[in-house]
Length: 163
Ligand SMILES: [Zn+2]
Ligand SMILES: [Zn+2]
Image (tube, rainbow, N blue to C red; front, side, top):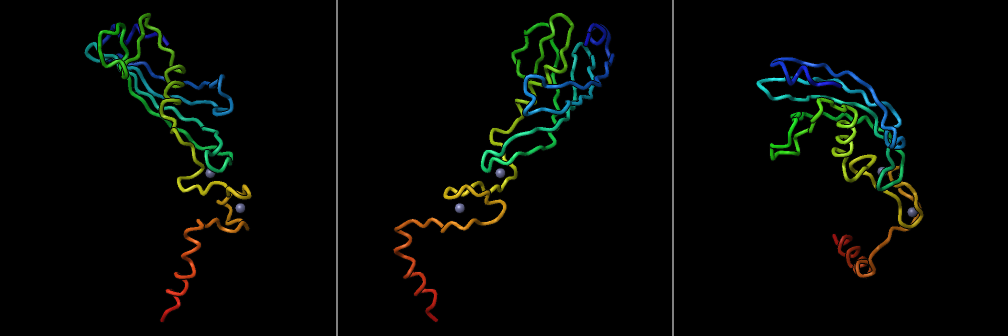
């Protein structure tokens, strides 16, 4: 989108209402990303505010189950024509008055992605013995017991049965 207006006029606002596909990552983002927001000029500072929403598709890091989860992202950035400000993290450089909204959103989708993707916080993962998904219930494998602990078990039993 073109930004001449918001840079030239205080109080000018440009609405953002667009939909795009993350074409290079159709496995994670097979569904469109919907974006709404605005670019606003105020006392020489141009601010981009937007909210994006899509569905993130992934395979659980622990149990390998396929998951599709709503993935909303919000962001606020200052648009700058020169990189004189040191706080470059919050800056989007727009030297030629052109803002590529999908590109900004796309970067944010990856930035805000959790490093560990789990189907749920307390995913039980897969049994190391038989590979069963333990979220669906216990498997029939014998529970693995540390030999040192096993040696103590009779004592524990005896102790427990003592009135
Ligand atoms: Zn899982
Ligand atoms: Zn098992």
